[in-house]
Image (cartoon, rainbow, N blue to C red; front, side, top):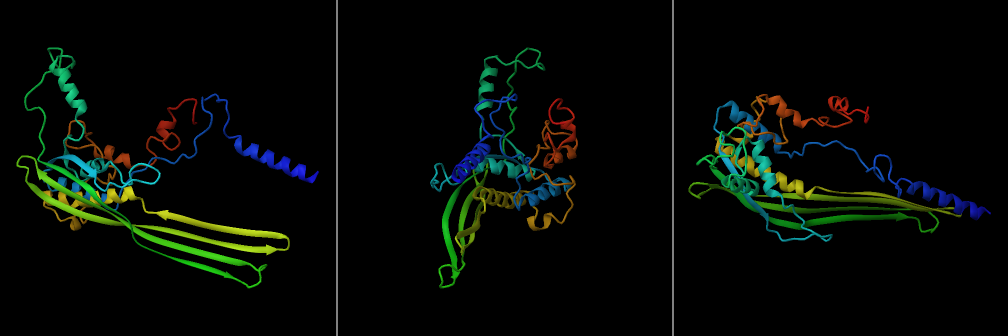
Length: 330
């Protein structure tokens, strides 16, 4: 009878655990509620603040911002992850665009011009209408697209998985089997990622700057456990943790450091002295932000800086948004 009760209790517990997901959708049309709910946050690196300070100081000093285009920054390591896919991000060009935006450069699009080329083709066939045009269709004007002063290309050239690793293991216990025994384990390993970028004059194709950087990445693993007999009972308790510095964030950091050095040369400003000046825009916009030199840019700088707020636009954190969501999260 006792065994039946034990089995029944275990079955009820299992059903309780699995009751979170059902085969019938609820009134909201979902079978289950996704786990988590952390707000969206900026994704800065240790060099983002310096890039923002660089842009602020250059604007405050009246230094001209060059037009820069970003080309292909490819993954040349050729390494694949065991679970499939590449081990290094394929979006290094996008990271470089964000870094140049933080540095205050005037960006012109050259990385993906497929939509612009299609619209040009449509406009050439008089298929696109613009309300501002008297003819009713978009006109094509010579010299309407600004050119770049420089363009940035390069690649991720190194990914060394295990530069050095070490570990310690410790086991302690009495010679008597029934006495408590403990085990402790610690592992540390180091890898690195390398990047080579070059800045090229768009008019002459002269390479005006080359940067080659690497960053080491550390991983740690720690575990401990205790095993003991207490009469007829056996107790085995263990705990541990593992952490690895994000590889893709390391790539972003290397790119931002390279962009910091290149833009400081273009502005004629020493990067190690820039942050001694106050940023005229106030709080740093480490997200990148709207390009302030374009017609799209807002007139008020604090509007751009608001992007750094963790609460902005979050239905549970932003009071302005929550008040407009009638019948939902009140």
